[in-house]
Image 1 (cartoon, rainbow, N blue to C red):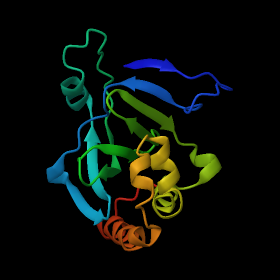
Image 2 (cartoon, helix red, strand yellow):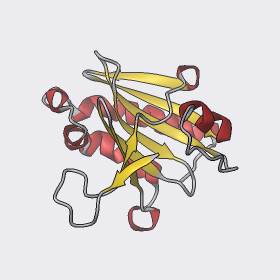
Image 3 (cartoon, one colour):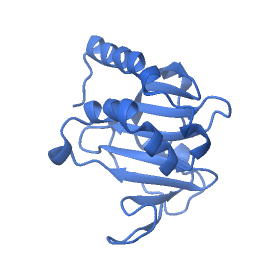
Image 4 (cartoon, rainbow, N blue to C red):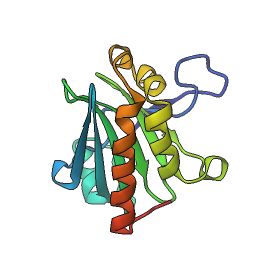
Length: 173
C-alpha cells in the first residue's frame, strides 16, 4: 500500500519513488546466498512474487486486491551485518525493475528503475555496490556504516554474483 508519492521538485531526501507502508516482502533465507563485506552483508536471492506471497505480506489490509500476476527474478539485499536490518534492495523483475531504500522503523522507499535510460539493471545494481554504496547507505539513513565501507571488499562479491547469475542462466537483464 502506497502511503504517498513525492511530487517532482520536492526538496525532501526522496524526490523519486513512493513511500510504502512497512518493509518490502521478507527475505527468504532458504533461497538466498549471503556474502560478508565488513559492516554489510550482501544477499543474492531468486524470488517469485505472486498473489499468495503478496496476500501473506498484506494480511489484514482491507484494500489488498489480487493482481493475478507473478514476478520472478533476482533481488540483491544490502543488510547491516551487526543488526540484520536490510537497508537497500535491488529487485530485478522484468517489467517491474525497481530498488528500495529502507529507513527503519517505517520508511520503505520504492524507486522505479528506467532501463531505457540506464541499461541493464543487474549491471547498474552491481556497479552501485562498488561505486555508490556509501552514498546509497547514507540515503537509507545508515550513515554510521558509511565510514567503514571499503569498495574493494565489494569487488569479489560482485564477481561472485555475476558468476552465479551467469551459471544459472537466469538473467533478467
